[in-house]
Image 1 (cartoon, rainbow, N blue to C red):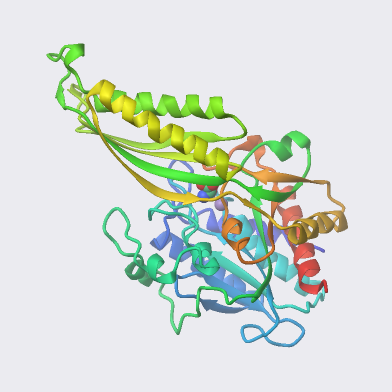
Image 2 (image 1 turned 180 degrees about the horizontal axis):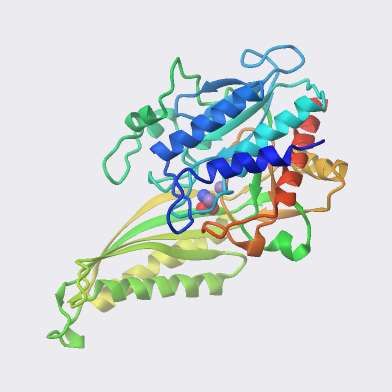
Length: 416
Ligand code: HGY
Ligand code: MN
Ligand code: MN
């Protein structure tokens, strides 16, 4: 399958300018003006590729190509879906999400150019709010499609500034009626997502394609440490209740716990604020969020229990009060042999080396796997870097990923 690499790189280049910061990172929060601008560009690209474009109740953008029965949106034949997200982490990379979105449109254009028709309709979907950088949870759009979260609950999500999701949807400027977000039972034959690996496994193996077999689960908790703001010079060390040192001890405990539990678990504290924030004031309050990942529910609970139980000891020892709240827990999930094997067959058809591999990062495919056979196509991340301005992938690998996606869609949409 020929891929128009120039077109793909131009699409990524265009999206890579929307939300671009002075440090070279992309900041595109869900339902923001930047997110809406990127989404509008993709909607135009979908129409240029001949897709019939719709939007659903939670703002997912959706474009369909007819199957052989000549129907797109009103087909009784289960659809083969592909897609990803356009929102980003703060100062993130240009490929995490967009590759799976414009790559899907380019894959459809490759099928069109090759005259490949499919028994089943094909759908490209742009999920809202995968990164969770604005609202309390991530993978919002796919959680709504899978029914993991109800549409009503999604619409009631509130961001830290008090903006309500259903009001923020107006930023998209969608016209016309929205289609239901929740997929009807049996309406999706399979789902596959093209994504950068965001790790170094493929690069180390010198392979261009990964077929994803499982996706790690995640727990995110918000913790507030309430100590005693006081004078940094006049307060003896034994009379302090330093909220930052309590948080620091907790964060080091997370690192220790993850190393002790092992088995591929990881723990991070990436977001933390210190108040009142004077250089000569002992911190009175710290708000922190931890991000825990594990390949199995048992390991995820082991790390989460370790992290929560460590809090009590620290609070007592340091005379610091604690409040903590679970922000989200997403269970790890297996992908499906039907979809994994399709990716492997597609890579072989494209003459590309490939391997089966787990994903340490969360993706929309995790929720889609709850309702349809799903897998992912990974392409190598240079230096294993992601969620940072230096996120990059060899253009050759980007185009190969799209070629494998096109083959995978043809396999999944034409197999018996
Ligand atoms: O955090 C993740 O794993 C994904 O990038 N949202
Ligand atoms: Mn990401
Ligand atoms: Mn992503």
